[in-house]
Image 1 (cartoon, rainbow, N blue to C red):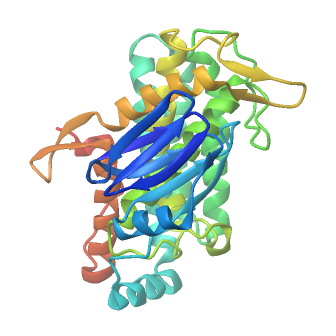
Image 2 (cartoon, rainbow, N blue to C red):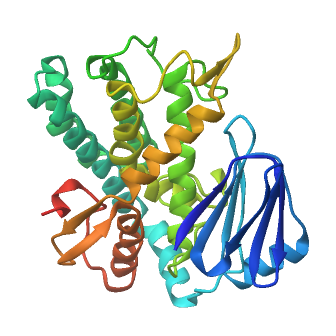
Amino acid sequence: MKTKYLMSMGTLSRKDNSLDFKNEKGHNYIPITEIREIYLMNEISLNTKLLSFLSQNNIIVHYFDYYGFYRGTFFPKEHYISGKLLLKQINAYENKGILIAKKIVLAISINIYNTLYHYYRHGNNEIYDYLNYLKDDCKNKIEKSKTINNLLAVEGEIWQLFYKNIKYIINQNIDFSRRVKRPPDNPMNAMISFGNSLLYTKTITQIYHTHLNQSISYLHELSKSRFSLSLDLSEAFKPIIVFKTIFDLINNKKINLKEHFNKKVNYCVLNEKGKEIFLINFEKRLDNKFDHKSLKRKISYNSAIKYDGYKLIKFLLEEKDFMFFNDKEKK
């Protein structure tokens, strides 16, 4: 089951038991059984007949605007519903929320450490202090946090220091000193925003195929998003998926800072070719398979997101201790 990205303007409709995407080049027929999710990355027309067909086949549609900003998700009727698990999720929110939130922030710190240690081993000594912070101070601060607000402050500090250290591990000159989201102001911020949105939507799709309710979260506020649990579960994967993709694109000169971005006075976004390059490399990294210690088989990072959902379910139903994904799960 694959992801289908539709990058050009056109019309998407149902044709018998397939999808028909029509654009200026003609008709492109897509077998419904071969896709799990669709990304609309441009102005694409569709109708309720199509949405009904997609819903019947449990296919999620994420849509982005022309500039690459995430705008929303068409979410089919949920087909995995568990009242018992929903009650457990609510109970955990009230009584064990801080415990689960700590595990999320800890996983972020571990995965940033593992991502950056690769560069330290290859001579990037400037990040030594930050690595020590992640290993010791940060871990202590997470453990001592008594409230979600305390924890969010620690998480903010982790990312802020991470952004400051990025300049030591990329080999192109990018003016990047702080995270700017709305709108991104330079190529680095543009890629982070695009990558984070993609990872968030990938997590929505994976969690849809579990019994978890996406609106009950533990680190992010419930009111922040209809899919706030996906915001939670995507965090641990940002260093591994989003930032490894960005570092690869920059350090191996796969993306050109002058050619693959649209820049105006107050914003910077990936252009059409830039988005295409990013998506190819993002998907490649997400589909990368590794031997999993506990499962004793190969899984992809994409499947690892869903597996984190299962670990959370086990914890909620059986109180089985767990950690969100980190590289130690790889053989």
